[in-house]
Image (cartoon, rainbow, N blue to C red):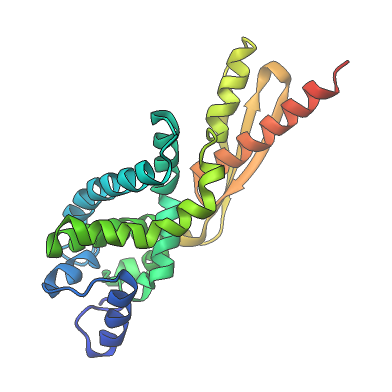
Length: 240
């Protein structure tokens, strides 16, 4: 059983709407079909497309950032690229594209909420980029990446230039010759595809434990690190 099976008449309008949002109409419909097929559905799935799409996305994003931020150095460009292509950004784009209604999943995967799982949706975005690349070449694939990511570049660039909170916290502690922090999962709650993680950031040298929450372990760790860093900086400022 599929979740929004491609090729079903009921989904023709959804596929048309997707191609309009992509800005690309497929000459090879099988590529679109495969890009939207999860490995749980069968052998002809999007895993290989995901592999290719990751590389195409990286190249296209690199070009986009190179043009938009002509005065920025390699380190800054690398950080903002990593910020833009991470799972939660791709997941957000997948939702904007309406992919949950179009993914082909096994009955079991569909029942367990796979159509809403961030990792599956993020992979499908990369697979779609690869499918456009194979269907029309790099130019339309780059145009798709620009279509999807230019608004994100404009709206998140300032945040993206900074180091991520975990890195910044580690560097802050090391600069003061203190051990790096530790992270542990304290709890998870919610259904599998809607889980919320609570992570504790532990800094023994300061007898400090700070909690953070997020929809993935990584996001929760980053939130805990952000809160811990804010606490440390505040304490340092208040010292005479």
